[in-house]
Image (cartoon, rainbow, N blue to C red; front, side):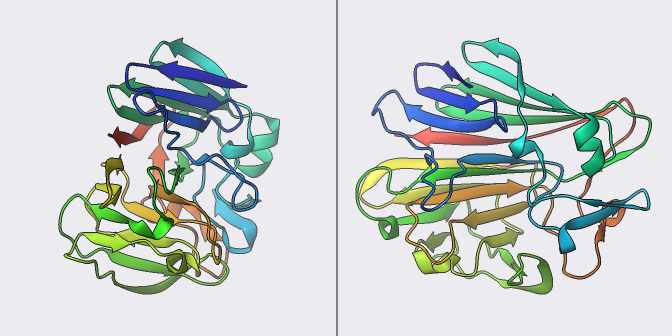
Length: 292
């Protein structure tokens, strides 16, 4: 079921399946900014990635000395969330551990996603609560896709602009979507701009670290833009379906990376893994700004 919030600037829809955004509609221009899930390219729209981001080596991981199997991007995106709070401009969706999740992930968790509007900003907030007796380990990330073009022109008329000059470090995955030890500087035009071409994604996502904490989709022919701010996430992915002319771009703030190739990854040793002690909680967020 899809629920909506709105203010004077935006109307936002969220599906209980995966607590996934279904719409970011401008009230000023009636423009739909969120990718609408055309199965020809990608049926998703804006997955919430928990308790893992990306692929696992062999589809498995190890925690507390025991091996578990889990699909790409974790299981939250396929679960039915419950609407647990609702106001005109905010709403919260929640899932918690059950017998099925325990087969995949041994922890007693409560995972909530809150969507709140303030003027032209949509804030996506995550809260992970540890309701069990053992320290909990998890990955987390966002995966929103945006329609391109969103104001005329073609996909390749648009570009990604970082909030400030930078030389991001691009980290590379192999053909299986698993991380390698390879990295290199990502050279940007004027140290800020990455011009969009479909071929950029022929080898899957562009994954970066050492970036400014804000990035925008822009074009020279329009004043409209989409900006994503991710102060609490150390990694950024840019993606559309590889080797296609897909008319969208995902801007993905990640707390953790996909696993490296080889043996199943031990969660307790994973870089930037989330850690929550019993009866405590962890919060993170990212924001989407629609500028017109």
